[in-house]
Amino acid sequence: MAADRKRRRKRSSAVMLLNGLLTIVVIGMVVVAAATYFAVRTYYAEGPRAEETAFLVEKGTGIGTIANRLEEQGLIENALLFRGAAQLTKNNAKILPGQYMVPAHASMAAILDIITETKPMEFFVNVIPGETSWQVAEHINDPAQNLTGAAVPAPIEGTLLAVRHDFFPGDSRKSLIEAMEKAMADQVAAIWAARDPAIDDVVKSPKDLVTLASLVEKETGLETERPQVASVFVNRLRKHMRLQTDPSVIYGLTLGKGKLERALTTADLKAKTPYNTYQIDGLPAGPIANPGVEALKAVAHPAGASFLYFVARSADPADGHLFAATYAEHKKNVALYRKAAAADEAEAAKEALEAEQASEAGDTTQ
Image (cartoon, rainbow, N blue to C red; front, top):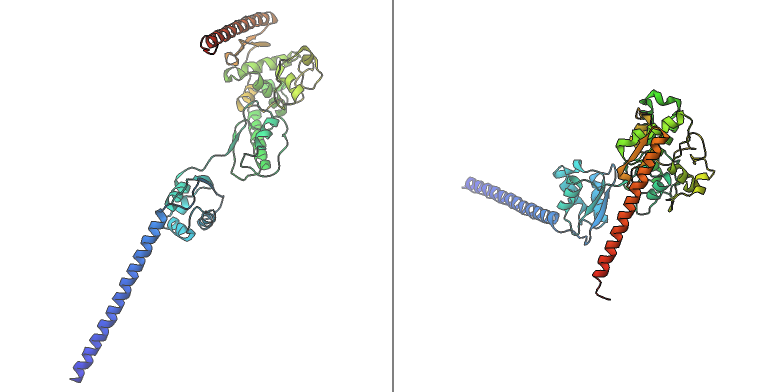
C-alpha cells in the first residue's frame, strides 16, 4: 500500500511539473506571438514624420548608425526594430550611400525599401562646353548646392573638363574643383598623346591644344564642323595670319565674367589685350573657355582642308558656317551671309508686325 501511494505521488508530481512546463511554454508562445504581432504591426505602421524629409546615408555607415539616425530625425520610433528587420531580411547589405527622399508618414518597411531598392538622388555640376571657369565657380559657389567649405575662386581658364561632374552631398567645393581639374588633365594628356603629329609645327604643347580648342568651341556648336574650324585656325597659324576671331576679343574685354551684352565695336577690335587676335600674332594668352572633348579632338585631328576663312551661313548658329580657301571666295560667302541675315531680319519684322496687328484686332478695350 505504501509503495502504491509513493508511486501515485511521483506520478502526480510529474504531471504537475509537466503541466507547469506546458503552461510556461504556452505563455512563452503567447508572449512571442504578441511581441511578433506588435513588431510586425509597428514595422508596417505609418511613420511619425508628417512631412517629406531628405535622409542622407553617409559613405561607410552601418545599419545600426542608420537606424539610430532615422530615430533621431523622427522618421522611425524604434531603431532596434528597424535594425533587426534589416538584418533579418539581409537588406542591410544592399544599402547604397546617398541622399533619399522619405515621404511623409513612411513606415519602417517603406523606408527600408527606399534605401535598398531605389537609386539615391543625383547631385552634380554640369560644365557646359564653352563655359568659362568664372561661370563654373559661380555654379559651385551657389548656396543651393549640397557642397561644403568656403567659396572657391575661379580656377585657371581651360582647366575644367566640360562634362557632368557628380558629387556626394557634403563634399567640399575644393574637392569638386580638384576632381574637375584632374579629369581635364587626364583627358588632355590622352588626346595630346594621340594627336596628329602634323599639327606640331603650330600646336606646340597641351596648353596650345586647349587654347585653340577653346576658340573652336566658341566659334561653333556643331560637332560636324569643328574639325573644319580647327583647320582654318591651324592653316592661318602656318601662314602667320592673325586668327581674327571675335570670341577672343570678347574674352579680352570681359575675362569670362559674364556676357558682353552688346555687339563688338571698331574700338573693341582695336583694343590692346593679350586675347585680341585682331591685334596679336599667333594664339591668345591662354584659353578663353573650357572646351569640350570634341573640340579638343578636333584640334588634335583637324580636317585636311585648305580653308583660311569662314563666316556664318545665317543669323541662326544651327545653320553652321561657309568655308573658303581664298579671300575672293570668302567675300562671296560674306555677301551670302548678309543676304540671309537681311532676309531673316525682314521675316522677323513681318512676323512682329503681324503679331502686333493680330493683338490690336483682338483688343476689345479700345
